[in-house]
Length: 246
Image (cartoon, rainbow, N blue to C red; front, side):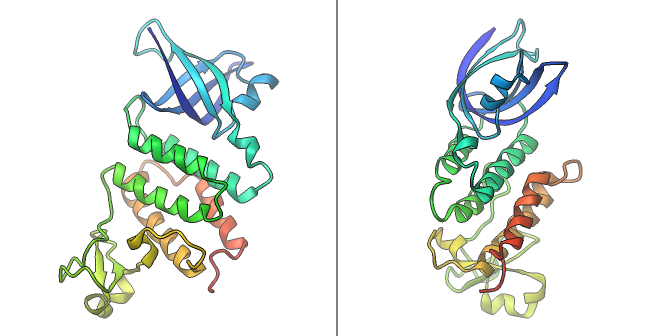
């Protein structure tokens, strides 16, 4: 059996002396694993960097087998952003999250397109906001979407100010004020899907608090710990004062 596809490298781990097990998020076949012979060689290592865009061919005797990959580099995203530590951190975080949470060989074409767009647009100035939107969309794709359309108490669409950690639904300022210490502050840019330079560091911090909580509760769960690359991303943002009060 064999198929050809395009995909983005999620992770690589050594197998034997010189081969590697490659995890790749493909356009049509979902997250797939395969053996790359000689994958740990100097020539292959540069091709199999996290975030790189590849043309791949998978072969196996039976569909249930691990199979082998033949890979050709289409675009080196890792090298493209090598001089920008924050962009590399976002790239690594996104790859690690997808690698952890997606089941193998199940198609997620919309999520793949969102993932590709995130990486393709890392050169934009508001790439941090793009990453937050991507985590919100990831929750939606996995069946744990947040409802930011109306207040879950009154049904009103205006004055949305909080988010309930129990339901993942928005709450108006009036209805939520008596319980404000038990609710998340809801950044307005999450509601409007606005990506602009006017978004404050406090709003970014509040947005990450929301995605961290819901990813931890519903996606990472008990058996899956938050990826180290995502923790490093948040730590890096704190150190760079991106999350400091404006």
